[in-house]
Amino acid sequence: MRGTEGRPSSAERWSRREVLKRGVAFGVAATAVRGLFGPEPGIAATQIQGGQLTASMFLEPNTLDPAAATYIPGIVVLKNVVETLVEFDQNSKPHPRLATDWKVSPDGKQWTFRLREGIMFHDGTPFDAEAVKFSFDRILNPETKAQTAISELGPYESSQVIDSKTIKLNFKEAYVPFLPNLGDVVLGIVSPTAVKKYGQDFGNHPVGTGPYVFKEWVRGDHVTVVRNDKYVNSSQLVAHKGLPYFDTLVFRIILEDQTRLDTLRSGEADFIYRIPAVNVASVESDPKFQVFKNMYAGDPVMFLINRQLFPTNDLAVAQAMQFAVNKPILSKIATAGTSPVAWGPLKPVVWGYNPAVEKLYRYDPAKARQVLEEAGWKLGSDGIRVKNGKACQMVCDVKADPVTVSMLTAMQGMFKAVGIGLDIKTMALPASEELAREGKSNMTFMEWRGIDPDILTVHYHSKNIGGWNMGHFKNAEVDQLLDTARATLDQTKRLEMYHKVQMTIMEQAATLPLFNLLQVDGAKASLKGVRYDVYRYYPEWYDAHFAS
Image (tube, rainbow, N blue to C red; front, side, top):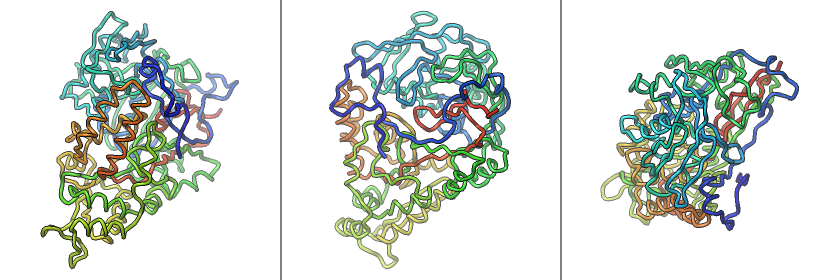
């Protein structure tokens, strides 16, 4: 489905100042049921204050340093501990958070922010312009290992402290996605004192200004945060202005899907991320529970194709893969068919999505065989095609996740049917990512969140080879278009460039999109006040409480 909420038509032009102030119009659609907003009218805060929320997560954070966080569960935790300068509502409208207001220079290269008074970090040190400068500057430091944060900071160059509550950020060039990126906690503001105190261990001791204070991280088991009783509410989006209702948030780490679901059914957990697809209907029909369904903004579930590693360095092989895969079958395996198939490198709920990509490929094994034959790939006696004496044999290094492996096993059969071999190697997620960065995997599993088409830069710009461009895709035209689009203030021209980029990426078969994941979370029916953020990915817990 395509979201149009808050989205201008492609023909509408915004003024330079409006484009930069809003960043970009985001098309985001979602569905959710029951309990999305704040407490029911008439319920006093004293009736619902206190208690503990337990939420079961599907993966362990890689770190709790926001600048270096790459896995979703880390972001889930950090959104309660660390705050950003700006936040966005579900209509993609920016609101003040740690900043009270901002302005941008006519050329788009300088952003000036006025900061809130009276805000303190959890360690008792003051939030000020020096802390903002420190937080952004450390992202550029290679020792921080800020892969995601540095991609969102774009052409940031330096900061100038005007006074304790005013800061100017300088960019090498105009960077339209900057403002929307500021709503992501990876660009959140951290305590300089705490970073200097803990050094490389800061990721185990995060200190921010948020409504909850980090307490402990027991690896493989849980992360706990406790309410910040000195918190000064800086959000316009919460339904009440006092302190958050829950005393404690406990995020349990449960990788196995059914075990995670069991914690909800047994009452051990109040909320779980990602209900197993085969169990969604049964949970939804049970009055003891509620279900939240969100088409979050970002990339589809996909496999980046390594265009520099044999045999996928041959365009014919990469294109044949597109025709060989039966995507509805894979959606059934992974999501019980709840998620629609994907045809391009963006979800259709992201502003700038190009529907023309949907016409390039369809499931057609005969076409896949034809493409390979015409490129000189001849069928061998073992059913695997050969060219110049080398077999068309791929390797995929992947996290040992049962659902992903089940998808790959099905794909293995689909590829074999057209003469392409696939070797599946399972391992820990960090190990699979490292092999992909080294260029040793033909296919790399990927999904990504984002509300601006500039996220295409993350996976398809050649400067990110060795980082998140795990397909090692290198195309001069794509690089130029991505660089120009992020600095272009004219929204119509920007749209045209992103449309062209998406078509080129798919014509060059740099990715194999599978389906647009509909994330389904579950909770006790008594849990009220849950609100999802602009990505439609992360629940916000400030107003959450149990019905009295």
